Length: 125
Image (cartoon, rainbow, N blue to C red; front, side, top):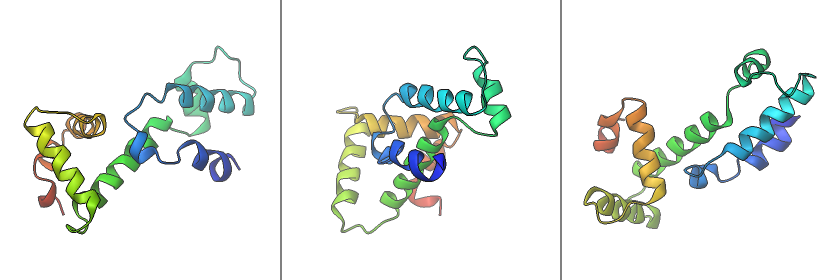
């Protein structure tokens, strides 16, 4: 029930706002899990995730950001979102301006050791 009703509301638009700190959402999610499983508030978070078979929400958020990024870079070149992405990316690469979203995407790819995908987005198909 949580996955079908609450989670979509919590993560709505996360592909766009996902660069923001999601700690408040994580706290809410862990509190829900602890209450559902009747665990003590002091139970370590790793135990809560392990026993529930769940992952932290930031993983879903980053996945939605990556899927959104793929749709942008492989999408129709005539769409406005494609042109805005290209403009933001050029400004980022030229160190003129870094959009928080673009910066987070680069961080995600670098963390996953996928710099080649970030540097050559059209060559990963």
